[in-house]
Amino acid sequence: MRHFLTLADYTKDEILEILDLAKQIKDETKRKEFKEYMPKQTLGMIFEKSSTRTRVSFETGIYQLGGVGLFLSSNDIQLGRGEPMSDTSRVISRMVDMVMIRTFEQSKLEEFAKYSKVPVINGLTNEYHPVQLMADYLTIQEAGLEENLVVAYIGDGNNMAHSWLNMAAKLGFELRIATPKGYEVDVDILLNAQEMAKKSGAKIIIGNDPLEAVKGSTVVTTDTWVSMGQEEEKERRVKDFDGYIVDEEMMSQADEKAIFLHCLPAYRGYEVSEEVIESEKSLVFQEAENRLHAQKGVMVWLDRQRNV
Ligand code: CP
Ligand code: NVA
Image (cartoon, rainbow, N blue to C red):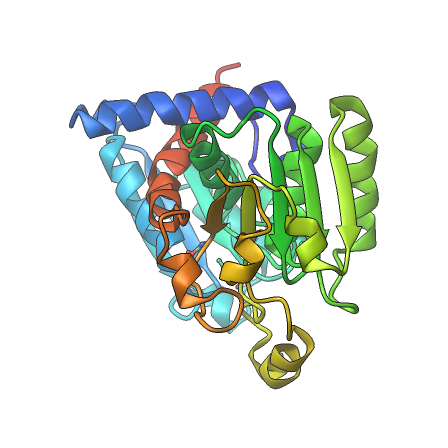
C-alpha cells in the first residue's frame, strides 16, 4: 500500500504514470464518461485549514469515480478538541477507503499515515503541496512546454517552492527560485532535492534576484506571500517582499511563449498584478480545473497499488 505524502517518495516513472492516468481520466470526464474506478469507496477528507480547490476537487473527484467524500473539518471532529492523530487515524481508516489530509506540520500527516490502514494523501502541509504540483505539471504538459522546461518560482520559500523543488529534482527540469533574503527554502529539503537532481539531471538555481530568475524562463509562477497560519506576519512580509510582484515588466523578461501559473488563491497587487493574472499568458483557471483531474489520477493510482 502506498501513501502520497511528498513527491520525494515517488520515482519519475511513477509521477509520469499518474499524470498519464489523470490525462486519460480527464479525456473521459470531458466526454461525460464517468467510469466508476472506485465504486462505493469513501474518501475521508480532514481539513485543519481552509480550502476551496482541494475540497471541491477531491469531493467532486471521488463522486465521479463512483464513491463519496466525507468533509471532516477539524473544527467539527474530535481532532480539534485534542483527540490524538494516531487515534483519529486508527478510527477513521477502519471505516473509509482512502484519506486526504490538509494540516500544519508534515510530521502530523506522517503520524496519521503511520497508523492508517488505508492510503493517505497530502492535501497540503506547511512543508509541501504535492497534489497541486501534479495539476501544475499537467497544465505544463497541456501547454506543450515540457521540452526544455525552465520554471521560475518567484516569492516565498514555502510549501509550493518545496514541492516545485521535488518535482524538478524528480523530472529533471530547470528550476530557478528567487526569494527575498530570509525567506529562502528549507535547507534540508533543498539538499535532498539537489541529491535527487544528480540522478535526473535537474538544474536547481537558488537566488534573491527575481528578474534574473525569470529571464528566458518558460513558466513563471508564484504563491501568496502569507500562507495559512502566517496571518500575523502579514505586515512584515508585505514589506519584505517589495519588488517580488510578478507584473508585466517581470513577465516581459521571460521567454515569449512563457505561461503564468499560480496555485491560487491569488492576492492581486501583492505577489501578482491584475494585468498578469488576467492576461492570455495566465493559465491559472485551467490549472485550477486540473486539480480535479490530477486528484482523480492520484486516487485511482493509489487504489490500484493496494493490489500490487
Ligand atoms: N491551491 C489550493 O490548494 O487551493 P485551496 O486552498 O483553495 O484548496
Ligand atoms: N502557500 C499557501 C498555498 C495555498 C494553496 C498556503 O500554504 O497557504
